[in-house]
Image 1 (cartoon, rainbow, N blue to C red):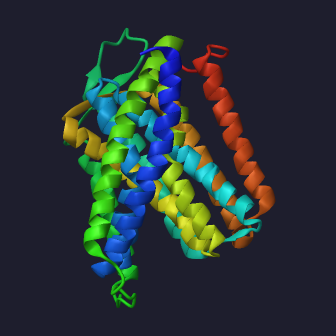
Image 2 (image 1 turned 90 degrees about the horizontal axis):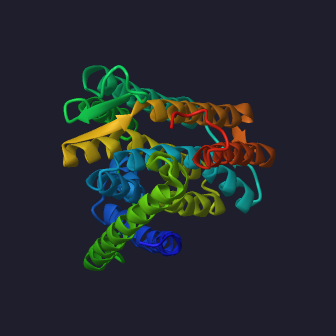
Length: 338
């Protein structure tokens, strides 16, 4: 595949991801309402899985293509994009500050920070117990196996348990008479098919671009694939903010990221059996994710709101991150191992 064709494919598949994800998320939400599922299932499983399906597909296809680092880079980069760009865009497009709650800040955001640390621990355990290469190898790589990824899955089970405690007395009140389940199932399956095809083409195109630039796939996954697969979350959060659902707008980002880190990467390993992670690249990116999460926490905690000025601070931080990653990819700076 020529480089120019690969760039065109990235643009086209990004648009296809937007369309397919819109069908998938809308159908998932209506089906959850129709079957009267409690909020913990709607938010923690249905909505999160719907908006995170592009990330899941990117991890699986990347691993099958022999470039699991690209998939992990997409997840980490998508998480950074979500916490820095999506809340900022929601605030700026809505033209007002986004109000938060203590529950959102202290429970959801801090649990998400725990999810980041748990995934980092899982990568470290892979390096310790399943090292790849020898002590003279410049890159520190470890092999993720099915037993290792049980840890983040168990932590996500804890997250669902905590959510369940807050919705134990749930009583369905939505009107389900106007929902056509067969039509929604059709839209859901169509969305899944579009996303699968688009992500498979997107991963192949990004690998071509990475090879042409002579840079690790991980770095391209952090920027290009991450931004493309984050479009569904962006759409959901901006629409929620436009409907004055500020908490839902921010909670969608945090919940989706928690799902990505604790479920998507482990599921990718469960499906492929094993995957190799370059810790020398992953660790600095995970550090950036921790810093981005702390920045979001601080901005939300001040006055329990995300102001317009703080939104620009978040966008500025993401611009710095992308600038650094691009400089690494173009060999302008060399803070990361080659």
